[in-house]
Length: 148
Image 1 (cartoon, rainbow, N blue to C red):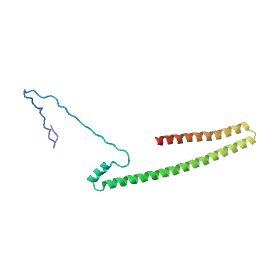
Image 2: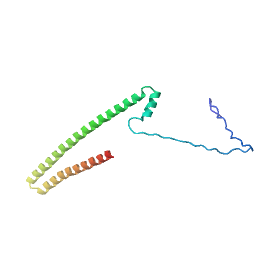
Image 3: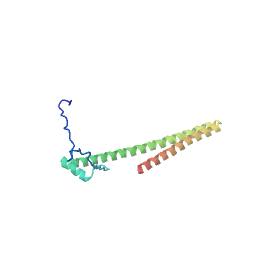
Image 4: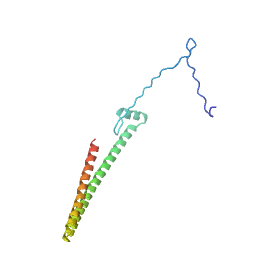
């Protein structure tokens, strides 16, 4: 029983052939088209279509793309500044670690523990070398990813 307010769809009867035999099957062809674009703005034909639908739509879309572009550039500037600050902090901390390690090793060596002094120097300078090499590799990978 149909729900309230809905009417049942009419039944379609297949066409009858002259001899009274029911025709079987029919062929249908469906065509699909997909269009894609890449970038901040749609193609000009699309902008024109938007303008036909809503007056001023094309101008609003272009203004939105310009605002987005300016915002992205500002974020990139901030990211570069922060990376430079982080790099400078890393260099300062590396200098502190290096000097502290060397001074500690010198103090321990003056107390007569030369093997401990060598271990301290090796550990502090080794840590700095590993950090430097790891940082350079990450920087190289980041550049390769951005390049393509």
